[in-house]
Length: 609
Image (cartoon, rainbow, N blue to C red; front, side, top):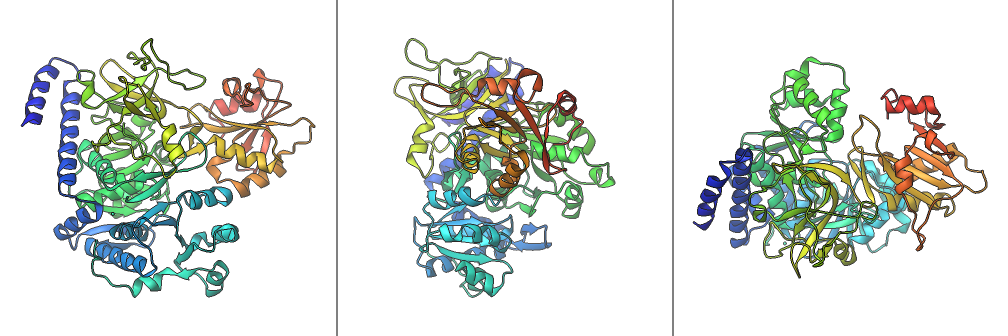
């Protein structure tokens, strides 16, 4: 009753403002999710128990469709396979609180694996299938995994690190693989083990880990509890007006929260059918949507740009897609995308796996990544606060509190933490030091605590928010977060511990920031293409530097930290420095010197990145 009264009073006030419609619906979504979460917690529910209810409602409805093979899994089949996973896990001696790493390309089995593990309290760690060598070993180690399940397509990647993985970690492979290859890896074949496992429900926990680069370097294992999974999925469903009969085309990797929670979560919790795409294909995108009668698609900003770069095809207007949900869509691409492909609604949102300050653009305001009411900001206590532009440190007033930003003023997005409220809680990471670094105190008021997003946004006069920059030590490229600290460490080791500064630089007309590495070369012996060969072995494509800057020295602070402000400002413009600049011509497979002619071609969009 109190919530209804509050909503009615708010409606009367909001009616006098231009943002009335958005404020009303935003509050409706917030209250709807909050009530659903309250019921969820009161009933002691978790994701497996909610899924069990979904199975009862839709036993024979398609739950997941695997685009790579055309295979369809009903809700009953998904439930039974996840039960088999649960019994297999117990048979291996895995108990509540143990962790199993999943390292495979996107497929329905990945969902059955983490769901089945959750049924017996075992947590999954979802590893980016692009990772190799040290980054892969780090992710296996930081989660404290007792076992790893990898896809046969990644057997070679596992073989590269196998000798460095503790022999106490159980190894299982899924997919077609030879007996000899299994023996070399010291691995068991998972598929026959699951085939022989019981299909009935196990007797009845943290849900899983999703790795995020964060702002401090190596990937961090973000804790996803059951209520967080439910909250993220519910926000997506209600905020963007999804329907029970929607069919979602999920071409995002299932080790990401967007693909696994925003996408697959609608299947597990709300009974929607989800088409799982093994890997994104721009040429097949709309054909797939037609083939499976999809009404909702998922994107990151890059995906929309890739689709726009494709030649015009009849299929791009012959689909039934009405809603595209995702993040990172530039205003220029936004309107071109909706006009060309006839998609009526863009559901743009901002959020990270672990954050407590997610926002959504629920009425299609072009360019906005979300909205928060300026009338009653404490209903959803997030703020943009001032930070030092160079250090990203919080600016405080005379009382020691953070300084809120005015409309139009860029600021760091923060969210007040309340561990008793599932909308406001921050569960952090497996590593407690990493968790502490994301929390600030005395932000809104004395003795409070808030989550630091690390991202700079801007709010307009009506409460719409616009993404400005990814602060700290992370930038986004090709839809992936790239940790500068991690890449610096790898490049430095390839160059015998040479000083290396890695940072992102903007390229006109391209989403995200391209990686640039400033490398110290005091002897003049640096050779680009032999360096490139090493980089190709050590880093996934999205983390490889697009630009190089070869310099006799780099600026450092008194504590020997490399200063990047000047490097980022000068970028790859050869007119601003005497250092040699190189550009990675991916098609030619080599670095090329950036002279003024090539620089102009890059900035004018004449060179493909």
